[in-house]
Length: 99
Image (tube, rainbow, N blue to C red; front, side):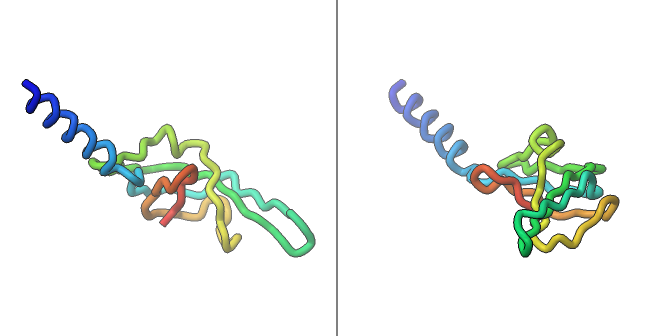
């Protein structure tokens, strides 16, 4: 019985710790694009993604509820509303990034 309990604990622990970064493939469009003027020379740009497809990872899933309404940062400030966007969404710490 002890071996069964320890074996179960090891399996559960390895499954939990194996999931470091939740991720999902996606296709969508840029929406709610916003530019914030922080100073005379500094602008930060943020946007939402209007999803048309989200395929969550089977191992470390990032679910749609976490993505809808999330403000992503456009570091280059090169996007605009309606632009097609696709790739991989990955949770890194407290952030969700587009790769």
